[in-house]
Length: 429
Image 1 (tube, rainbow, N blue to C red):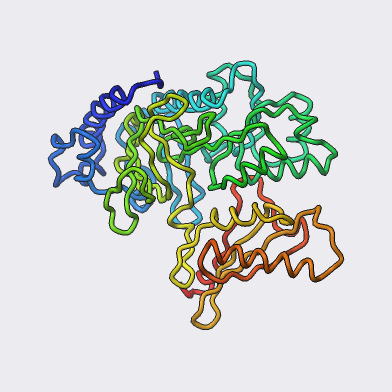
Image 2: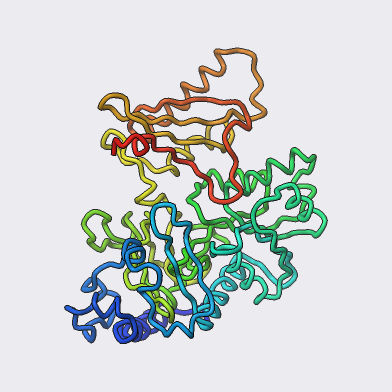
């Protein structure tokens, strides 16, 4: 079903778009208010979407907990939610049909990267309110794969189960993948020799091409990027194919626009901006023109793999993760890219924004690699200065680099907490 021509994709999108706009207007009081000044019959194609105002995370929080519902409460069979660390959590409801669609999307993603019924899939994403674990779980079971639902944590046990049960596919955050590889070596297990990991499906946080290189050198044969968020379904919105040149969006379920995050203007394919997504098949809580806050580029040409579903390039960062330092926009992925191509450093780091007087300063704290052996202070100073120079070339601003010993940066068994903005804590922003 997902091997559709571009013409078929457009026909399906237009048909489902007209249906979901009508459905949202008739069944969601929130969207009835939002569409009150719009002739909904005039929304016929993707190009007409610009007539509709955006839906934002603030809309979800202001209508907490279930103000965006489009079905009777009796039809709901599951809830998921964000952590709510910056206010009310983002609660998302699902009907039986929503879960069936989500399962189909996750199964598609796993199949596209080569997962089959012969694979043993270890799911080290969190289970519970976070959507990661359960999405992959049901997708893998739909394919007929064998599932190990380890969730996060108990890292040494994770490694033991990988070895003893012959795990061939690992699903987790990229930062946890690096941590698993590190822990395995501490247990005298070489993941590339002693484990059977063919495929890693990594998501839930932005990561760089150099992180892929580290994962493939130290952990799995092939590392693939996946994209999703609870508001849209969970994981399964988009994934890379074997060519690893962008993530295919399942366009029969979603319409993607790229906008200028400051003006809201829709950008052309190939231009960098904020991704906006319209769900075409959600029953419980459809999202029309939802601002994801993720920064990427959309490519609409056919992929070398033959799929005509458009591709989003690797997520560069989020508008709310972006740091503005002395007028320059800085994303963690830019810093990570530089760190991981610099010999002598580990992939574990923190980014600290602070202010001294009226001047912002950016501190990058990073571990030296365990194989960086030296008793000369000059070697450490040279490595520090090299990284400062590389970061200045990449970011366009001076950066203070602090090198620390291995294992000094806190590890995460879920999403890595890379950014510490002391300006916010001090009330300077």
